[in-house]
Image 1 (cartoon, rainbow, N blue to C red):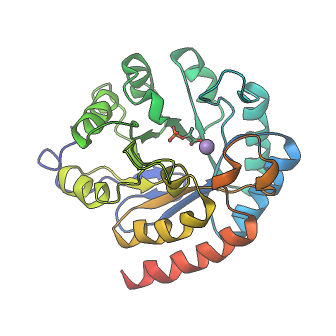
Image 2: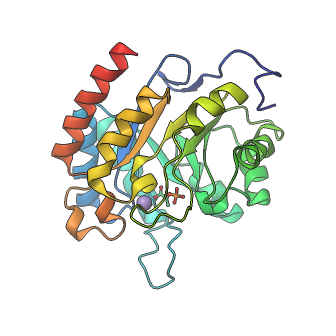
Length: 263
Ligand code: PEP
Ligand code: MN
């Protein structure tokens, strides 16, 4: 079902009046984690002003260490809902396990499946049964075939609205957090009709690499970007090192618009 052979024309996922795929470019941005009402609203207003259509922010966080901030859970989802009412931005947020699908689906416009859960087959089946789009991140060591197979789990349950997200893979390189595989963008476009966006924040782990890779992603044909933005990156509870300030994000959005015009 994910294959171009099965469906030659590109899938366009519609979220209200926003179209993801086809000839559209979507920008999703916001903090790694929802930390507080103030932090979220400040981020939301900044990304809205810069031109993003979606607010991102995790209420359930898959942290490497159990001692790191784990997220505000339902309280965080409620803040996302308030930020949506305040700004009109759509919400993309992660669902980590089958038990919280029912809760997250009430607040999210798009449900994110994180890299660590790309092969959580019960979770893929569960989001395959909902009527909201799913953002499926590439697993840390997943091949394109494994990734498309994961998408197939969602599609085969009846949910046709799957958006893929390249977020870097684990290689021998340690300077960057992951190695952003931008060749995945044109490769996926050849193999599949599904839209694909790029996450240069997790893909690099360093804020100064986010802009160049975001621009390269658009030049490579990505249908959009998901970028971490924090009003005070130094004091972020997660992923501060890869988060853009609102000012830097605004400059990047201008650059993206000019690139999108020429390609
Ligand atoms: C995130 O988006 O904050 C996140 C945890 O991403 P990934 O699953 O790609 O690591
Ligand atoms: Mn993050």
